[in-house]
Image (cartoon, rainbow, N blue to C red; front, side, top):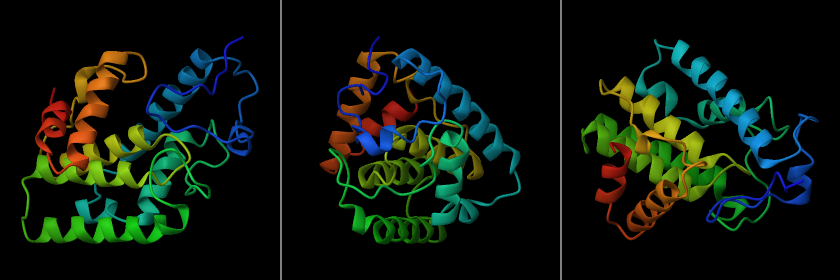
Length: 198
């Protein structure tokens, strides 16, 4: 039996306590975990897209971000929708998460109100900063990509394609995504913008 919690390179490692938050007893390997999470993400995505009347401002806040994560992962993990409480191999210190998430959403609302960036650019910047904060124990990339999609849709654009395949299943695609995130960490956002529309 393979370790169902073995994460791909560059992904968040789960603590033993977080591993105990698994709700589905039938999961015994990575394929089972990926299948359960994928199904839950589809459900969470449907939940988000049914809320068509929400404006961009309605999703750029802490309660919505937590609710979306809960909808995407709440059938699989007991800690879904809750910010992490421990240090991680990725992201900021846990005690800074709430403050930094609030600052990011305030910045995004400012960008939106003052037309600082075009819709794609605004959504990609939101994604980059939120995934860098890494607020949740796991699922941050998938959550923040959906946040960016929902925002760009509400700004009148098509959702991003993010390489058109699952990043969990295609290692080369994941490597390209991680490289684009690292470039954005160094203030070069263009590779991530390109990847989002690839």
